[in-house]
Length: 205
Image 1 (spheres, rainbow, N blue to C red):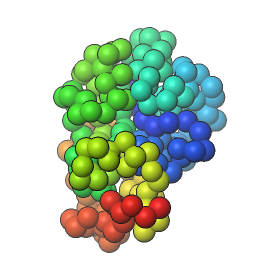
Image 2 (image 1 turned 90 degrees about the horizontal axis):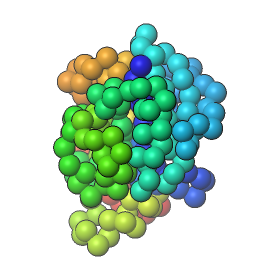
Image 3 (image 1 turned 180 degrees about the horizontal axis):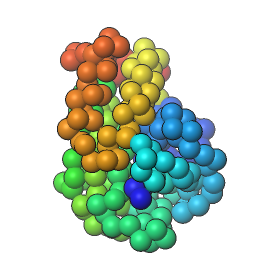
Image 4 (image 1 turned 45 degrees about the vertical axis):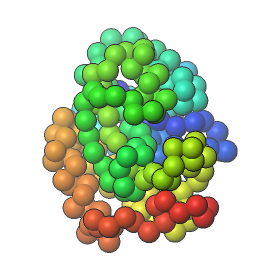
C-alpha cells in the first residue's frame, strides 16, 4: 500500500490558497481514479482505492499545516507503513509556478508541514514538490502562501492538478523520472511551457 498525502489547511477559508495545492492535487487524483468516499480518519479525511493497480490511501490532514505529522503518523501506524511507502504532495516556494519535482528525503526548507512530518516519521518519505513561486522577500512568504492563487493563474493550477492525476500511477509505482517528464510534456502540450505560467506570482487575487 502507498500512503498519498496532500498538504494544506482544512476549511473553506484556505481552499484556494497556494499553501493548499497539495490538497488540490490529491483531490484531483481521487476524482480521476474514482476513489471515495472521503471519511473522517487519522486526524483528517481519507479515502482508499486503487491507483494503477496499486492499493493507495489518500489522506488530507485536518490538523492544520503545522501539525500534519500527527495525521501522517497515525495512518502510517495503522497500516504499518514505513516512510518509503509515503508520498507527500506540497507547495514549493523554490520552484517556478507550475514546475513539478520529485525527491526522497532532504530538508524541510522552511515548510512547516514537512518539518512536522519529519519529526513524526523520519525523513525518508517521497515529496512531490509543486512550484508556486516566491514573493521575492522572505518577510512576505507567510501572506503569500496563505493567499489564493491569482485569478489569471488558476488555469495552470487546474490543468496541473489534472495532469498529475492522469499520471499518478507512475509516482505510486516509483517511476519518478518518467512521472516528471510526462507532467512536463503534458503541461507544454497544453500551453504551459518553460516560461512562468501567467499569474503564478501575482498579488492579484
